[in-house]
Structure formats: C-alpha cells, structure tokens
Length: 425
Ligand code: DSN
Image (cartoon, rainbow, N blue to C red; front, side, top):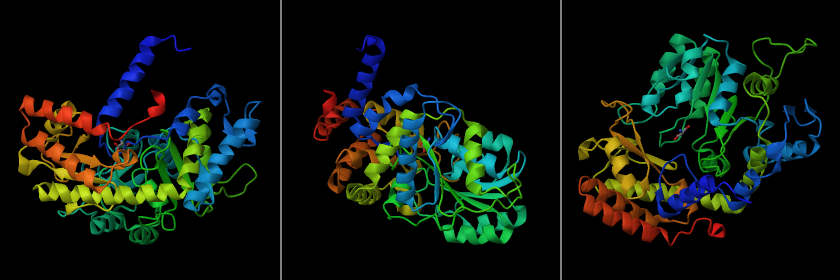
C-alpha cells in the first residue's frame, strides 16, 4: 500500500531518530498507538464546517458523534460546562479567544516572551502583537511571576484581557490573585495552560478553571494527545459587552467562542484529529494517567536536583511542573551551542532565553529541559540522574568530538531499555 517510499522511508527515519534519542523538549510527548492510529483514519475525508447537530454539509452524523464524544470527555476531565475541540493548534485556539474578546487595537496584558511567555501572548512578531495592543509583565530577579508588576500595569493600563500561562516557566500560578486584579479593572482572565494541562487534569497543580473566565490548551504536550488545540469554560457567562444574537438575546461567552473558532478563524474541522483527541481524552480519564502525571513531577524534581548538584543555575531554583529553565552563563556556554552539541549526542532540547537575557533569541543564555516524553518512555527518578550525567558530560566537553561521540553511543544503547512503538517493527 505504501508506494511512496520516499516519504515513508523518511517517516521511518524519524521513528528511528525518536527511538534512539533522549527527548527533552518540554512541549513534546509520545502519543499512544491508538491515538496515532485514530489520526490516520477516514474522518480525514469529511468536511464538517459547523458543530455537532448544526453543520453546513450532509453526511455528518458519524463525525457528529465523534466530536460530541471528544467534547463530553474533555468536559469531564476539567469539570467544564462547555468545550470546543476544533482548534487546529494552540495558536489557533488563542487567536479565536482574542477574536471573541477583543476588537483590533484593544489592549491585553500577558507574560513577556523573553520572560517565559508565549509568542501568541503579544509578541510583536505574532498576529497577537500586530492586531492588538499588547503590554507585558515579567518575572522578578528570583524568576517568579512578578504579580506586583502585573497588578501595577493592570491598574495603569486597564487591559480588556489578562493572560496567564507560559512556555518556559517552571512554577505554578496564583490564578486567584490574577482574577482579583482583573475584577478590579474589569478585565477577562484567560489562562493558556498548554504546558501544564496534563498536570492540572491530574489535580497536581492549582486549578485555573474557577478563577479564569476562559482556558485554552494544546492537546499534545502533557495531555499526550494528537497535535491540536482546545478552548474551555467551567462557567459559561453572558458576554459583558452587550453583543446580541439576531433574535436580540445577549450572546453567551461560549457562543462568541464557537463563532470565533468557526467561522471566525477556521473552516472545516479536522475530524480525524478530533477522533484522536477523543481517544487521548479517554486515556486521560484513567487512573494510569494520574500515575503518569505524578511521575512527571517526581522526575522533573529529581532532574532539577541533579542539575543543581552539578552546579547548574536553575531559574527560580527548581520546578513545580514538568520543566526547568537553566541559565548557562556560569558555565560559559550559550543556549545555541548547548542545543547544537547535545543534538550530536542524540539529546534533544531547545535553547531558550532566560529572564533578563543579554543574548539574542537566536543565541540565548539558556536551555529549557522537560521530562514529559522521557516519562512516557518509562523513565523514573534514577534515570534522571543518568540523563543529567549525559548532558553534563557533553556540556563539559563541548568541543571534544570524541567524548560527544562516546556519549552518543551510550545514549543509543541506554535508550534500548525504553522501547518506543515496538508494534511498528
Ligand atoms: N512552541 C511551543 C513550545 O515549545 O513551548 C509552544 O507553542
């Protein structure tokens, strides 16, 4: 069946790369076989613009059931009253939230990208910074969210929306405090939980849903599903801006968000991906997933201690979640050099700006290290020591090709004990 050997050979090459390497990119994970299988199925052939029960095409009765199942499972995971599972990605989900909440040119407050925030939280290079007026808060010298700065800026600037959530922040969030300031200035609180969603689903971190009006996430990071986005509300509410439907009724926030996803920012949903989301959500509802979440946090803490023991400078001195951010300036290595050299040893992570970085985003002074993927491969605390040993050996011999080649061979042999997709041959 697979005649296009050029493409399938490359896919197989990627499988071998994933099998042989240590995956420490904090935003990556390995889906189950059944999640992957669901993605490669016939709903990919179906157009289904609209929502279950209200589509613009015929023949949607089965994909309606699939999408409704995904919605129902997701609502159960986070105890929500409404969910939209159609966003193709986290950026799409965030774009839809902004469209629902703000008019072009209106103001929002988010964590600065250079302090751990996300591109879609108002970077000037992103639609969010180009379309809206983005202002930012940062972190303190200790690497913790600067809530005082957030409050001062919120009072001075009166943003329409305050975003909490990050891409490179290793600590939990005080959602309650953010909601209090938002209520004072009349802002909507939007939490982008793309990174820690799986840990929140397992009840291991603060619950944003009671304090944040709107919550978005990706589905492929700690949630371990297919690539995609979601938007959720625990409590639906009437929009505070007087927006009415054609019958003159005030629109609920859920209605504005549905409209912002389709037809606002997307056309046909990817029903094969939604099927895979439904499978992943089913997995998240099992006890096994809670065990996974606990192990992720234990592994991250074991890894953080192992780095500190070897003299590495962790932003905020540790982690509450699945990742850590390491400032390499005391080791005299740039993030770029570290990433590129570790790649040669089959250890994958990403360079990352650290707070108050003096280097460009292409170089950076730090690396971000995350454990969701290695935890999925079955690693526990003792293996975290081994991983840090590998990383330390490479970084301490950064220009020594021979040592790097030795570590590469050791990594390959070490990873044989943690099989990945053995069913794929
Ligand atoms: N680029 C993702 C990350 O690595 O955190 C977020 O979109």
